[in-house]
Image 1 (cartoon, helix red, strand yellow):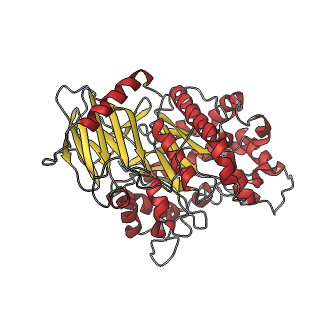
Image 2 (cartoon, rainbow, N blue to C red):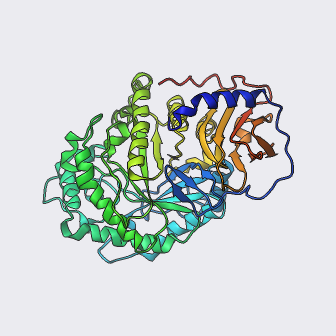
Image 3 (cartoon, one colour):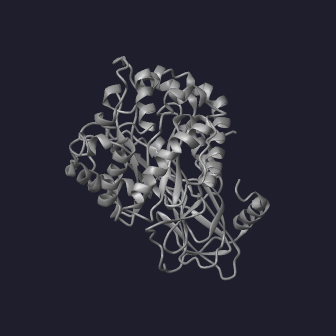
Length: 497
């Protein structure tokens, strides 16, 4: 834990908060809304008022042509104003929004303005509702030639190696043809890096002016290429990270800096990081600007299930996944610290799509490390419109949207409905602490708030607002059901590891 020396203090203050008188709401003040642009401060995102902003949201990707959603409520893969309203009403404040180079530039220099307009339409709907976006250059399996998505054919150089058309995701990564395409791409064959950088510049020019844009996720899950066998967990391949992947990201970062000098670029580790491999990224050179780490956390049982759809893997995951998922979180903290920016868990998945126990425990681990996340729904089927309540209860959590200081601990126990936040106040921070409370999901009979070091400004609805008391060095907030810390969802298993 980053503030390990304060663990005892956290425990003491949380106990004081639970023993204190309930908070009494008074008239609201300024700063209850949370907006951008955000800036990085070490491992944190901060808003213009200096508050730490925690990003909790969804990962949105439309993988079928035209690679953006229709603005049509009659189509299951549509994304309308009503969908954006639904997303915001669940309490989410962030979306990792995918774009495909293949959609933007299907042929060399053949830029498609309609494509960026389609992505911009989604971004604008979210921004108007106070939802941040992270733009993600998405690839899965390189490109069309390998039953994948992402990169255009003109940068696909497989040296004529054969590819089995029966291979789907994720087995398509193991084809020698796919591996060769990645190897050649990392070697900058055909001036691929410059082409990729120009694509990113198009995106940044069109979408980078929105104050609710957090930054740019440079490349989704880069595959190590033919060297993949030396990159498996736990040792990973730190030398390849430093000498092969990071130079590509440094180049892309410099390209974006020609258009946007301020918003962070997110480096992303190769796919085996998701399962516990150590990473070797180091602090980027000057000229790359503010950076962050976009990482994923998916136990190896997830990949096994994607291939076999074996439901017995869920029980296996109960034993093997907790230490692996914790290792991923620790590796992310270490890698983000070397890069000099905040970590953000941009994809998170349990073993199966309905393993809500595993998903809840994974998100509890993200809270333990005070790291935000974006969870991926099925946008092709319109899952947001018909979101299962059991899943909504797990992913739409009580969380600190903006903290008037620096967090040292926060946790939401979905099983009991108890939320605890402890933070250290910070000189120069303006505005109150804002806590998102999806009341309909977690507190249908209402909730109560306890504070120490703070004063409740607003409560009772979908947010709790707390002002720091004068001269308070540490503030604690506890939210719980009106009956107290009682088990309200016994069906969810306790989390270990």
